[in-house]
Image (cartoon, rainbow, N blue to C red; front, side, top):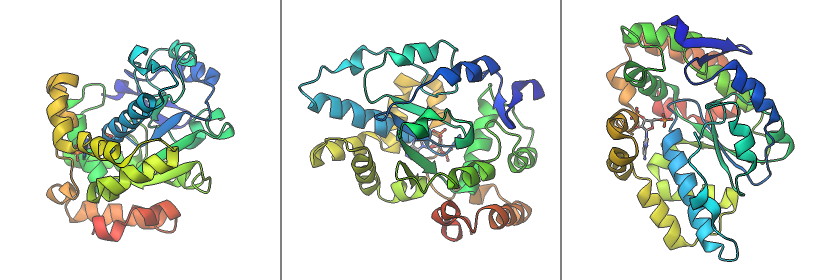
Length: 288
Ligand code: A3P
């Protein structure tokens, strides 16, 4: 089990997806000002927001009639910055404007050019109890991640930052140092679930995508849990049912016992409650 993870610069990664070579090669990555960066811890909704952003990029490119739409010509690249083969950064240099780049990494480990070149970053937040619940179910079926005999043993590793991409609490504490920048916009899973139209509208304005109302509504519709789950039969096969599990808020209530609540509430209080991002989690609403 332990051979499935390795530590790089203090953070745990899955050996089957990330390698020391890729981290070395990533040093050659040069961000562009018009890159669209999606940052989110595993299970925070990265596939959902990835769908929204790629749809917005494709629609904007179609509208930009003076430019050729290269997007259909670009071969599918494994979309996470830190996953793939070391040569991917060379291939990424050839991609047309508005590259969509997803990452699960903490900001201090990301290539500096992302911040230096002022690429805009959409930072995903999800309440830690639902995120842990989603992560546990995913670990049971996703073979590159270590699996667990019980929820208890997963919870222990999750709280200790021993799951792939490390501690969610550290992740948020680190990102909290970066959100003073106007190029980083935090958005929560829960707020977009509550009102997807407003969430997408916020994203459109932040990245300045040239879309009209009708087009925005179409993007919202195509990003619904049901349509993504149905479509996943084509895009992900049986894996779709794992990736699009419940897609809701509060499923943690089916898994957490008093002892888990106590431990996580304490962790939240000690590490996040006093931070801006901690406040943005709306912990008292979603985790109590
Ligand atoms: P659950 O396991 O709670 O259902 P990620 O993409 O980062 O791995 O996150 C996966 C989580 O996002 C899963 O949560 C999944 O169901 C949820 N999700 C995926 N697409 C969604 C959508 N269109 N709307 C709401 N939630 C979605």
